Image (cartoon, rainbow, N blue to C red):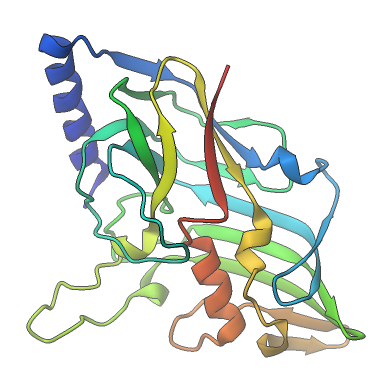
Length: 266
């Protein structure tokens, strides 16, 4: 499924709104950052206690967002990483394309290279597209999440690095032989539905990212040790060999509830 499908839906929505209902097309700026509410300081490490009791200090946390789409789809109440169809029901009310590499440890707004366009039809949720191109492409080498830091608990520490991609390494087998197209890779690359109740009115859309949520369920004790002198650990970037820590970080990246929050700002 390519972005062109969503663009055409938005165009039809805009045309229908302008015809009779009085709703209108709206241009807007889109930006992203680490969540300022966390007390982040640009260029400084960020330390927090994870849900499993690890003291985690992040020195690097970068997220690549290929696109953001807004929708009339009501958000689900369940949290966590939930598979959703690549084309969700509900109309697309806005889109932001162009791709942005977000420094999640920097609370300063970082602007998407292309402006957003949408309609003032009420939005209920958002989608993040974690891809550098066609969301259905068989492979993608773009690093979507790059994290580095140290976790410590009970006198043991795990200096770690993680570079997650969403390419062939994340492909899942079909759910059944009768459904060879089931489990398409696009399901892995779209985070949806993220709650966002708003009506576009020309104000900026601000995506705020909480990096703590990525590590909430990570058991650092299962990380792959890649060096003993000095000690160093790495998150695996392969679904076939992933351990608990690897799966937990990947699921945290794709969670529709927890890491991501959107607001309209002047």
